[in-house]
Image (tube, rainbow, N blue to C red; front, side, top):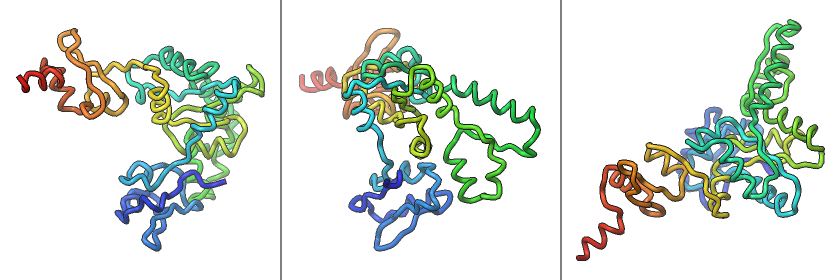
Length: 277
């Protein structure tokens, strides 16, 4: 199976941004191409974020998830608590409704699994058998310890992540034949899914937003921050003194246009008509 981060050679433009961004220097350069060194990479995702050409790309489970849904399988979503940052102003009930529109059977918060994980941490502390306990929910940090600090591996808490715990709980409750999909911000979760059986697939927030947009499923985001709206929305309705001032999308989805409307300015279409007159 291919490594989770791959380099699209045709897109690499020798800008070296991925090399500078990688905190562990896990990127090799040769023949005018940057290449992620799988043996050294901890899947933090910095190179993917920093590459302006899209040469460093993370694998996507979206096609697999769409096949699950299309096949009529019972697909359950475990949604990370950070959805509140990815979809500001959106309640979990709203997000769950959107997921069901896409074909998911149900959605639950990963925090349910975190409760069980916290209890297991408490049990380990009470036992007092481990002199030091390293706890983390992040598979990238686990990879960091395994690859760069192997002497500390025995100190890692022998406890699965909240995502894995939650997906196990759902399979115990709804049956092993269901498919579980973790939805969150981290590409390293894909490695966690590959290594175990609890998580069947991983969706990143950006992939979910794109899927919702393609299917015409609206998730209402409430925000007064223009940059936040630009980052997470395909279309925005801008209010001024409580009344609809204008609608922006596509090329008009920029901070200047949004702030112009939010301060009482005319909508772009109205401005154009006025100019022509």
